[in-house]
Length: 579
Ligand SMILES: Nc1ncnc2c1ncn2[C@@H]1O[C@H](COP(=O)(O)OP(=O)(O)O)[C@@H](O)[C@H]1O
Ligand SMILES: [Mg+2]
Image (cartoon, rainbow, N blue to C red; front, top):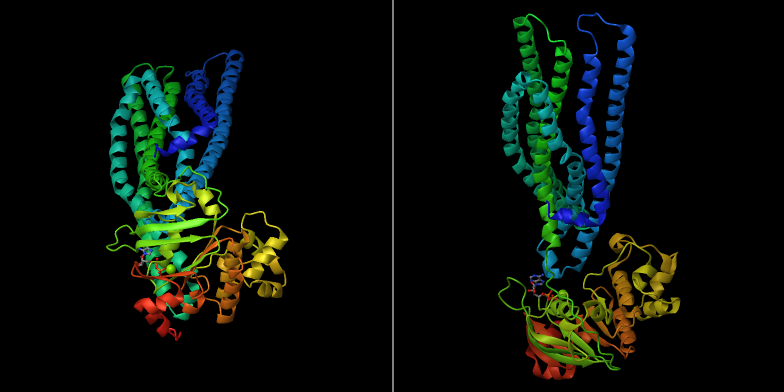
């Protein structure tokens, strides 16, 4: 928990202000019972006294007491405002940091945690920590000061009366300890269950079409119900336990006050003369006693909240402290007129996998070349693409861009050379134009040209708003092929030196597939790497790599492979392509 508070560094002056205010408020607050009892002490116990003298004195003392109460109120108000501000800024910063980190993680790093967990960590966990921070500022300092101050004051006023406190405080502590031991583990469970609930909800929403198509609503509902019930049960358990706390604390507090009054009564009974300051002192002791008890409750709440927040803080720290496996290099890309990309005996193995997903792959391409990768699913094709983008780093061998190992290049430099079309089209909820320009400053013509190459112009022009058409979240208002074409336009619009198409023509009809490939063939200053399943899509490539189970079965042109590569022949035959 405390490690995460380091993020507060930039807010230090607000933190210092709040600390000063809290200390000030606590001290004034401790003076209040003393000041009010001064008013009571002025009342003559035997009813005899000079009103003309006593009343002005009482008014003066009363106003001072009132002033102190108003002072406390005002300070409390300011503290609330400032600490809420600290907490919100803290939450904001934390969220931003987490988000930046998550975005920077490699595929392998983030898949260890899962999307839902990453989302819960960025939202609910951050909120939990923020709330705790706001509380901490208000309580962490003021409760211990109040506790010690009020205890000292009680003892100072009357030693005998204070003994009651010595009996009841341990009672309170024991009781609280019992509840704490039972409740704390539940909070840990609760956060984990929130993760699960987010997972189920997310899957149900993103998979809604499949769920409906398979008429699986009932099963999904019961899955949600089960998770929802689990979390509800845990909450009920925790809240039931917690609900014992307040009445019990009230009871112990009343017990203390009764004890004090009892001792006073005994005193009066046993003495011949009543101490004139007795009532004022009694009132003072009772008020301080209440303060002692309340500060204990506050400290206890803190001790309950801290572990609860710690669970969240740990979950956040876990992410923040991930050392990204993909390290940034510091070299810039050599500015050659001809770009060259070379795989040199590249092997890659996923963590925990027995066999490499790509092994001993070598090829070389330069501007204008088209390299195709074909093979069954799971063959390692996407892995090759991910290696070029450095979403993954090679296990053995090296990938060279213009002669430099890409591990040594600045990541953003490397990626700015590449136009990437993912296997599953990624569409953002914005206009088609934004989806294509995607952060780059592109002219109208550049965007239109890109759409032409991707054969997207026609369907876009049929939309009422054309390029300004707003696409729904994940592009649900486009067909699969249309989404792919928007993604292709996005990749080519930046005129990158390297174009990666990860099975990006799979949803296109044959005619469009052919047209897009012909258009791409005219871009002759880029290296094109095309992953495909269809022989027709890739057979014109300058070099075709046949991958299966991570192994390279053949490298060559279509004509060469037909003669030399059994695996390729089989693929051709299965697709009815003449060999
Ligand atoms: N993130 C991952 N973690 C572990 N194994 C993976 C991961 N992604 C893919 N694989 C495995 O690596 C192999 C190659 O996958 P991939 O490159 O996606 O194949 P392709 O694109 O040819 O269908 C498959 O056996 C797959 O199960
Ligand atoms: Mg793939």
